[in-house]
Amino acid sequence: MKKTKIISMNPEHIDEKKLAEAAEVLKMGGLVAFPTETVYGLGANALDEKAVEKIFQAKGRPSDNPLIVHISEIEEIEPLVRNVSERARILMKAFWPGPLTLIFEKSERIPKRITAGLDTVAIRMPLHPIARKLIQLAQVPVAAPSANLSGRPSPTCPEHVIEDLQEKVDIIISGGNCSVGLESTVLDITEEIPMILRPGGITREQLEDVLGLVVYDAALKGDPQAVPKSPGMKYTHYSPRGEVQIVSGELEDMVETIRDLQKEKEALGLKVGILATDETKGRYQNAIVLSMGSRKNVASIAANLFSALRRFDQEGAEVIFAESIEEKSLGAAVMNRMLKAAGYHVIFAGGKKD
Ligand code: TXA
Ligand code: MG
Image (cartoon, rainbow, N blue to C red; front, side, top):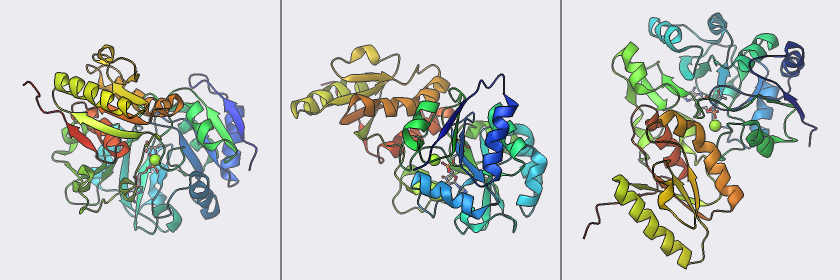
């Protein structure tokens, strides 16, 4: 067990002296959790294999799941990859800093431990001012997965990080809520047609606006035969302790079906959680009802999803029914995380108008 130091900081007024201490810990091979615009990250010096190993230990992360390397300026990418294509330059210009991770062929400088033996490396330049400044002060690229225990929902506020990683890391920088609330989009640009390996903060529509055709990795649909190109996508994830089931269909049918399912489970003596939306939350009674946000504002749903999943644990939900949302723009990333939390268990609420 370690003593974890918590450093509080306002992202709009960065205290460089305090941040320099965290940067020094990173440089010396320690672990620092820090806010990004997507989710909190658990950082280590990407060029120090021993430091990187500590990330896997602290999270309980499977060793075949590679890490994203974070940089603070575009030029810092040069020594880390074999070459930067024209396509990569267009994407970096359009979306960096921001929630887009790009896959490149790796250079010799990247330790194999980071890429889990792959010849490619994932790189991202975050937008969050604390993340950027920390990397800049550390003067090293920073390997950082989400700062949760493996399998748990990713952390979108400092309390989540403290809950999972207190006494496992050297420093936690507490810098408020993450504005996007879902992880970055992982885009493989080593293929002829760019492929989304993980939907996230930058949508397919946004990518297609600058690139033309972009496809999803077929494995994202939960087909047990398909092997995902992003090793992380094969693990159960984002799971609260209660069992999650998604209910899909027309809004009214969803609500009715969830109300029926609630009764069934209550009859068995189970504590029921319902993941609803602002438009529907008033339709449920006597359950743990949490709203993800408004269906008219998918960004608010993205920002709230992970903390709602964690809240169900605090409230002791044993089974959770989640309303589905439309799978377009950011909704694709929201549904991807929900499907993973539910182990792809979906109940179709077919029109039950008798
Ligand atoms: O928003 C984010 O991306 C956050 C913040 C902290 O930056 N980080 C994050 O890291 O979500 P992590 O480790 O939780 O997820 C990284 C994902 C995994 O699905 C992993 O398998 C994939 O990126 N990945 C990493 N390197 C890869 C590679 N070389 N090829 C394919 N997928 C890769
Ligand atoms: Mg993660």
